[in-house]
Length: 470
Ligand code: B12
Ligand code: SF4
Image (cartoon, rainbow, N blue to C red):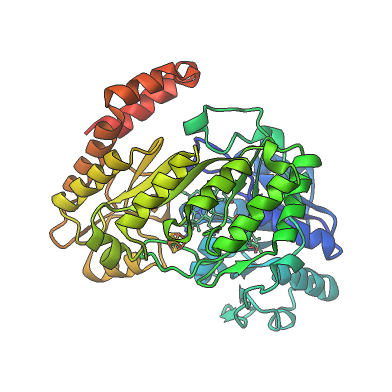
């Protein structure tokens, strides 16, 4: 059985490209489960169109992954796969949130809901047993985590797939299937674009028990499931020694939830000499599960930079609207400790949450200036389906998105209007944040000393117009 796993091309995110670890995990599970004829087509780095690939090579099954903003591209991929005679199964964050919408489409045979390493194996075994045409729908009803349109046109949802509880037992991602030399480094905005990086990402735990109102985590869920430190270190060693990683990105929702484990991981990296390869925390860290010692250990373990979700400079917005479960004092302490350990810092800030006023957004700008991270990332609040923010805006406000493609995080436009909060104010404060943060003489001087500023002068100028214009 030949299987192609596809991530569609992404106009929603084009400044960098990371490997798609979800597809890596599925491929790893397939290989370990006895289906070695699997490949990954990642639209963000392929030189050949999907259509050309499907015309050149025939596949029994095409599996397509999609977050919310890319669902239209994913559906186009499904049409192409179907036109080339493959059975189509879709999965990933958007499919988990809205399975019916895709399961109804004529080009989509099955939708996988949630984590799918087990689901895909049971699906392949059933397919192999019952044949491709006609599809024996009844045979798939005992596989947890599927949605599909039956022969009579009605949708059928199987039992929910329980979250995998022993992550050590999940086969490692099939890293060999990524065309690694085509991906960029993990943070080109900060480090300059390195097209020769061998940047791998690693998932050391899944899920997060916090419930920040804007956060969409349909796959990994509200519990926290760590891999054992030994299991993570073995994978890390493999990435460094066998795959020659030049940088590693930890993409956990919250890798430092268990402070003791985070420290053990760092000590392990030091003891095993894996600290020569720089690493970062892609999704950021949580400030209230850290202490000074953790940052010292991270630095020794090769960590280059830490990012923190600061979100708001207003304690009440942080507590009652964002529901971040952290205080401004904890934010300040984390930055202080990280800086003392000589780690670079990044801060993520959100503008335009419900209930915000000009004053609360001014407080956020003031906090960004006070913390003065090496990189500040200001974002306009973006509601994703399945989040408390989405529900509130739908209930009490007006959502502007006409389409899933408009639900992207990196946008310079407000996504909704709610109460007295006007979109024009949010956009004005967002631009002001960029201007006041980056147009300080010291910042400008720093930027001009970076070779990358001059190497990429055109895209940098374009970014500047977008961020600093009003
Ligand atoms: C690393 C990361 C990135 C990286 C790499 C992209 C990638 N796709 O892996 C970068 C920085 C490039 C990125 C970009 C974006 N990301 Co991102 N990203 C993540 C992050 C932090 C980890 C992803 C991961 O490795 N998960 C672990 C693996 C095991 O899970 P998985 O990928 O979901 O795959 C499992 C299942 O979903 C399922 N599955 C997935 N695909 C398929 C396909 C088939 C056929 C089947 C059967 C099953 C299946 O099986 C997999 C194994 O269990 C997640 C947060 C999270 N916790 O998931 C956000 C997250 C996925 N990203 C998100 C978003 C919004 C984006 C962007 C759209 C941002 C934007 N511009 O608005 C872009 C889209 C780029 C793209 N092509 O996907 C959202 C998605 C929310 C939503 N409702 O869709 C998330 C959940 C973050 C969040 N909390 O908001 N992202
Ligand atoms: S933003 Fe981070 S801390 Fe908050 S719920 Fe999402 S993953 Fe957890």
